[in-house]
Amino acid sequence: MKQEFADLGDEIDTKSRRNVEKACLVVERAAKLKFLGRRPKGKEIWGNPGGGPPHVDTGRLRASITHRVEKTTGEIAGYVGTNVEYAAAVEFGTSKSAPYPYLFPALDESSAEIDAALEDFS
Image (tube, rainbow, N blue to C red; front, side, top):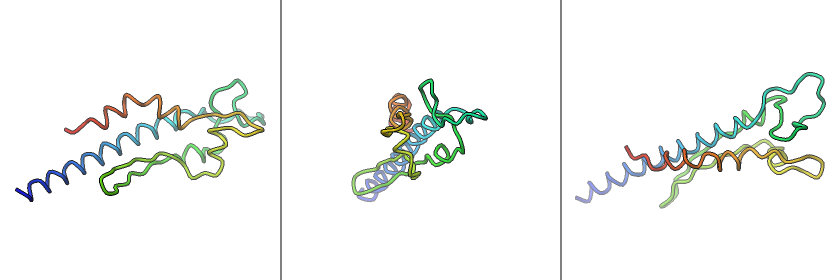
């Protein structure tokens, strides 16, 4: 009986980790889709002057958006983000540039898909 409970716990952990992974992928995909195509030739402005998301220059930031899933005692957590040094300046803006949020809106807009991924225990 004790082993059956241990096996059940392992199965729940595996499925939970898989579901968190799915949820992270949903947010990661949505964040990457926030960026427009390449910047038109001859345009010196990095951002999109009409508002909205920036044009992509090199694609470094968009390509760097990734996720990880970590399990600690009693918790499975998923993280979506980037290690590019200028990512926060794009998301939140600076004194010289407007913000072009991509991570937080991706999370907000994906809430229904996230909920579905986390609830799937099939």
